[in-house]
Length: 225
Image (cartoon, rainbow, N blue to C red):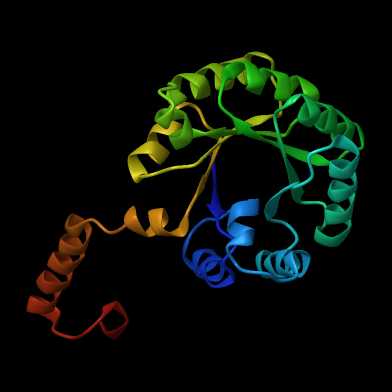
C-alpha cells in the first residue's frame, strides 16, 4: 500500500517529504498550467531533483495523437529518469500508445479510468498503474468502490504487476474507502493529508498526556530523568 502526493507545488512537495511517507508525486496538465506560463519541463526537473531518483514521478502526456505522445514520453524519460510514469488517457489512441511504450520498457500510468472495462484494456495493454478517478466517478453516479474492487480482484487473479491507483478525492473518507476497496496506491492532495491529522481528539489526547506528565515531572523530559 503506497501513497503519492498529488501536487506540482515545490513548497508543498518539500513539506510532504519531510513529514509523510510519500512514495512519489503525481502531476497533471491542469495543475501544471495553474502555475502560469513557465518552462514546464524545467519545473518537472526541479520536482525530480527534490524527490530524488528513487521516487515515482507521474506526468501526463498532452498530445492527442499517438506519434506525438510517444515522442513526448521518450523526451520526458530522457529528462526525468527511469522512475518516470507516463500518464496516458485510456482511449483508443491511448491504448495504442500504452502498448508501444510498454513494449519499449517505459512505465505507464493509464489515466482517466472510469470503468472496469477501461481498466482491463489498460492492464492487458501493459500499464503499470490504472488511475481510477474516484470523485469524478461519484459525480457521474458510478460506483467507484465497486470498480476498484473488480479491478483489484482481476489483477490479483491474474497475478499482474499492475496496481490500481485511486485519484481525484474530495475528502479523507473517500481515500480510506479506496484503500479498503483494494487500491494499491492513492494519490492525495496536500490539504487532505493534513486534514487526516487535524481531528480535535488527536490534539486533546496529546495535550492530556503532556499535562499528566507535567503534574509529576514539571518541565523535565525523558532525557532529564
